[in-house]
Structure formats: C-alpha cells, structure tokens
Length: 565
Image 1: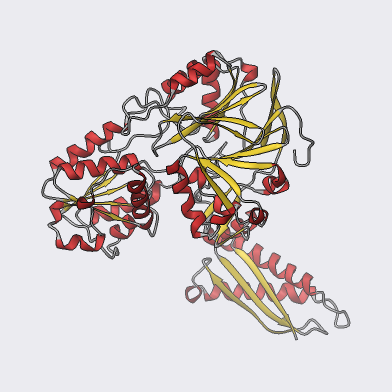
Image 2: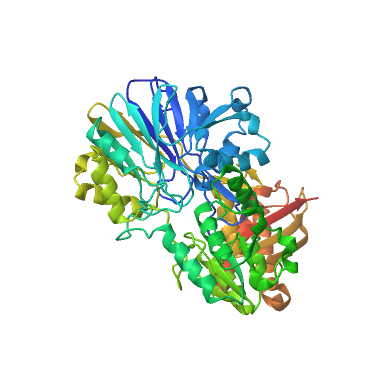
C-alpha cells in the first residue's frame, strides 16, 4: 500500500488491535488523504520480560506522512490514545502539527503523555461535540455518542461515496448510565435506514459473553451497600484512573456515608482534577483532601480512591499490599475494594496484591465476591442489537483477541450480514471498499514496537535472549589463547548464573572445563597454523552446550570469550 497512487476507493489498514487487547490503531485512506482512528498502546505480556509498553508499528504512517490529515480519538483510554506521544516524536510533526480530534475529556486525558514528552506543540487539539459532523481533508466524519467505561466516547460515521462506514469505538448499551449519556441508537438506526451502513466495524471484546453488560449504576448500588455495611472501617477503592463514572460513584457512596475523599496515585489525582475542572466529575471541594492530611481524620470517615487495580508493581495499591506505601498503611481496620476485572495477563499480579492485602488483616472485596465492576464493552445481545439497528451490508469485527473477532464475525452472519461480506481481518491487513466490493487487497507492517526505556532498542531476538536467561540461565566460558600458536595460556574459566550454583557444583564445573579445553586444543590445528578464533569460539560453545544438555537436561545461554595474547 505504501507509495500506491490514490484512488476513489476507501482503504483501511489495521495497524493494531485486531488479535490483542490494546494497540488500537487503524489507517483510513481515501482520495489521497488519510486519518488515523485511535493511536493506542498495549501493556506487556508475561513473555515480554523487561518491556515497559508495546506500540503499533509506525513505519506505514511515516512512509505516508504527507497524506495524514488528522487523528480521530474514539475515547480516552490509553489502549486508544497512549501511543500518540511516541508517534509525535517523529520529526515530521515538528513543522506540521497533527490535528487530533476528540471530546474535551478525551483530549484532556490524551494530552497527559504528550505533555510529559514535551511534544504539545506537535499536535493541534480539536474538540468535537456530540453529533457534530466535520470535514477533515477528504473525509466527512460524524461523531456519534456512545456509552463506555470512560465518559464522552464516540462512534465515528464516515460518510463516503460508497456509503456510511461506521466505526463503533468501544461501547456498551447502558440504558441507565451514570451521566445520562446513552449510545445514540436512534442516530445509528437513522443512518441504517437512510444512507445505509455500507460497512460496520464493531467492538468485539465481549463477543463470547452471553446476555447484556450490567449497567454502571448497578456498581454504584453495590458500592453503597459496602460502605453502609462497614461504617467503622476506612475504605480504600482501587480502579482505573480514567474511569470517571466509577470514581463518581465511589465519591457519591463515600459522601453519602459521611466520608471525606482523598486520591492516591499520580494519574488518579491528575485525572480527578481535570475531570472536576471540565465538569465530568462532581465532587465538592469541601469533601476532598490531600492524601497527606488523612492522618488527622478519623479512619472511619475516610475514603481513599487509588490506582493499582491491575496489580502494577509500583502502583499505590501494590505498595500498600507490601507495606511500603508512604501515605497509607492498611490493616484490620480497612476495607479494600478492587473495582475492576484483571486484564488478561495481569491475573497473577492482581492475585499477589490481593494476597498481600489479606496478610495485612484488611478485608478485601473484588469482582469475584461482589458486583463491584461492570464491563464497558457490549455483550452478545447488545452486539446483536447494534447489528440489527445498523443493518450493515458489510462487517469487520475489531478490538479483541482472535477468538473474540471470530465469534463476532459468526454473530454477524447469524444476524443476516452476507457471509461473503464479513471479513475476519488481523493486524497488518488492508481492506478496500469500492462500490459493491469489499475485500483484502494487501498488507502493511504491523508488528510490535517495544518500549524498554527508549523506543525500538528491543526486538524479538532480545526478548528471546531474555526468556532464555530467565528460564535457563547463562554460562560464560573465558579462555586466553596464544595468537600465534593457538595454545591455551589460561583457563578455561567458567562463570554461571541461573544454571547451577557454582560453590555446590565444583566437580561438574571441572568436567565442563576439561570438555572446553579439549575442544579448543582440537580446533587449534598444527603448531604452524594460524588459529581461527571464530572457529575456536564456535567449538567451545558447541562442546559446552552438548555437555550441559547431557548432564543437566538444560539449555542455558552459552557465551564463549576467547582472548588473544
């Protein structure tokens, strides 16, 4: 697709989000102009040791930078906005800032990472309102309200010559949302009946889950019951810092029970302050105190809203569980509520935090014990309703792991979308919509871009080495050889970490030295030959590797060091 001449068709390249939870990013191109829909990050999986974040591959964006006229943000979660600061680091945005469109709250949340990176001048922040329709380059885009776990989310309706292309963003059909802002099914239905939805791209996260997603207000009732049932306890509630609906309900429950509120965690404090400023969060000034002042209040009159519901190692809640939090020491007089579900891959970390909290004597409540969390994503009955109301002629499931996409595609066929018009796309796929045609037309780079301190210094090879080191250990063999004769002058010396404990394995290490010495002497050739030191390294590695495997059935990393004198 890179370098292809512009044409009348609409092309969509998926740069992330199809096959994993996170990295949501898609490239829409038409008549020579292109927009990004979201630009998110993914948190590392267990098999990515040392990695801080995972980003989309930006190479396609860079190769076509001159066509990019804007980035449209569906909502404020970091899996949809968190990669912006890394994209804007590209020098091409220094002279031509990127227009970024979204609701006021979404842009406020997205600005945080960009501001921290010192790149605010590389973006133009354009606030759009519910139902607004804008011309962005060659695109005619309508911003349709949807309900999600973060306020002020949008579905995007692209009005094209081929019909309406509707991207739902992340959504649920909550009939009683906290802020009263419902998914605008009436407008989506009008599009279906009027212009007709030519292509629907829809959130697949809960495509395996039967029924309807519980209303967020049901969580509020559960929280109030917990507060009322523990009038003598200090209450600590952990949730996502961007989940302002949840924070609002925690605050309401706390105030109703006579408690004063403090926030803990940098992102929580920052987001609460911004949400109060914009009106997205109603929290009276006299019921909010700084965390350092809670010691002067009776514990049973305090509610702490903090970060760390995913068990992040240095988060406020994890430090509490380890007894290392500067401000809060939890114990028998505390009720701790984890108002979230563990993101796939985080279950172990969350379990450790819960165990640590229980050891302190605190009472711990999580979603497995009480209805203190409701998903922000539509379940099967809601997905059916969206398909029914939109009535699309074509369908592509988005946002989810492969099994979620697969189940959603089958659901679309059940709801009457022609099977030949349902595309099961993955990261890197490019689809083209033209007239009555909807089909795959190519691929773009869409691999993982790892962040470990800086961007791009970690690849698959580095991760593979880290996994070997973590699982099998490392063995270093050092030997000094005469550069003229190949005679071994000193060594071999063997240093091991994670293979065997050297003080308890002297005999094994002595045998290993003999094996390496024999291999090097055999490879040195005759006295008159000039030794090939690369060959000596290879012989040492192979001989030691065979010995280690035969004697211990392990495969540590073997690092030969042959020094010349």
